[in-house]
Amino acid sequence: MVDFEQPHRMRSTLTEEGSSLCVRIPMRRSILLVVFVTLWLAGWSYGGWETGKHLVQEFQFFEFAWMGMWALGEIFGVYFLFRTATGEDLLLLSSDRLTVKKRIIGIGWDKNYRPSELRNLRFQPEVGGGRSHRSSCIAFDHGAKTVEFGEGLDEAEANQLIALIKSRCSISGAVPTTQTGITFWQQA
Image (tube, rainbow, N blue to C red):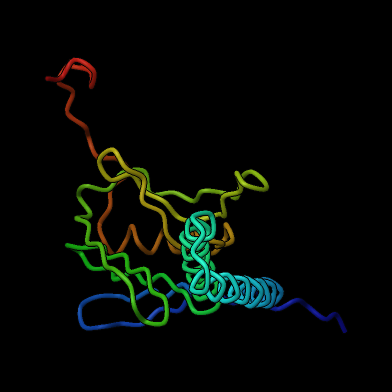
């Protein structure tokens, strides 16, 4: 008897909330990355604690400036750890609105978009490496800005979500832009 592979489940989940469809896309979890960042934060916090104790005893401008940079690193590290461990993107889809919610431990910000103003809804593949690395995601153009969500999605799942968004929000292929004949550097 032949043993067939089962289709992979979507990472995202879909639920109906009133007249809207809620799409919950959790961040791609990496246990090794969470452990590494946790250990790095422990060492970083210890270094800041020791420098702070020394700074209280004897003020030195370099240590004072270093503590400012230390605080920024601490904030970035904690944000990155919580985004990786608990972060998610939520989409609320309805015929008159697309809401993108970026959440960390249930806290975050919401941005609402009119479907008629969205252009070029697409999958963006992973590109680059090192500092120029960008994870795959779903993106669309809104005016002169590109909005991205669903970081780390596979192409197959992203294409399913794009089809769902287009059908639920009545997004057409492209939105015509008005041309004034004046380029941005000629505007007063």
